[in-house]
Amino acid sequence: MEFDGKAMVITGGATGIGFALARALGNEGAAVIIAEPREHRLQEAVEKLSGEGIRADHFVCDVTDLAQVEALADFAWDQGRPVGGIVNNAGVAHPRSRMHKEAMDDVRSLFDVNFFGVWHGCSVFARRLAEQGTPAGIYNTGSENSLFVAAPGSAAYVASKHAVLGLTDALRDEVPEYIKIGIICPGFVQSELVSKELMPMAMPADKFASIIVRQMKDDRFFLVSHSYNIERVDHRHAEITSAYEGYAPRYDGDEEYDIRTLIEKLRAAQSAKAELD
Image (cartoon, rainbow, N blue to C red; front, side, top):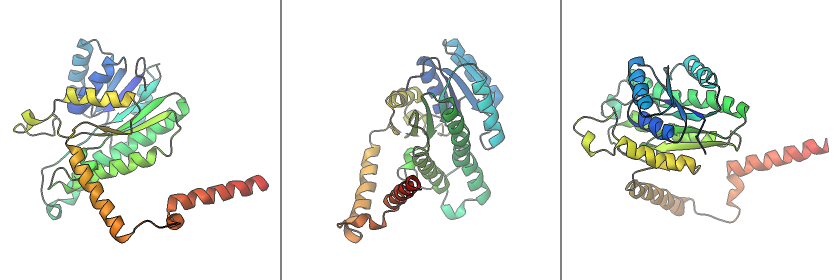
């Protein structure tokens, strides 16, 4: 991926990780468009970015509303330059509690932003970027919580970020090769989601963004940052491997029930039949 001269859209781009990514992409030559519902925060962010020599604009958008995401895309394409892609970064959290104590209205509102907001961005921009026909990227901000449970007592948040991983993984099978797909997996990064007491211990957002943009340019799918996370990822993989080795070990011909293999065989048979017909 190259970003110079392209428009890059970042939802949740006025603060925290989104703002840092806007700054980093702007320093790569992108014209950044930041979006979120609070216009005064967008205006403040654009003023900062413009003061640093970055081409920046804003658009008021609530990602839970599909029509507003369509309008955001209209705005991006109306700028008169190729759209390089979108970072679906908007996200929320709520205070930690046990799963059975979480109010369902709170769970649904969290999923509306963290998952369905990402879904809206993917569905709108994937279609339009495919029609544009030039190299571009769709990057979804998941979390280390997409890979394991990093924050106990946050079932709704963790589940939403696992869902973002599933969506992002599925999407890369559905887009043309010239559209790169990636999931951003932040660890503990300074943002408005972090309490004042913990903020000094978190990774600075600009440091995080510099690590992530480098991986965007290298067309990586998993965009990672916090090195200690591999300990927890290895533990998760070891647990899965142990389960398979103990209860579903490999055997010759074990692809007989593999759904992806079976779908590919079915498609090949249908294609061969169509050619004969």
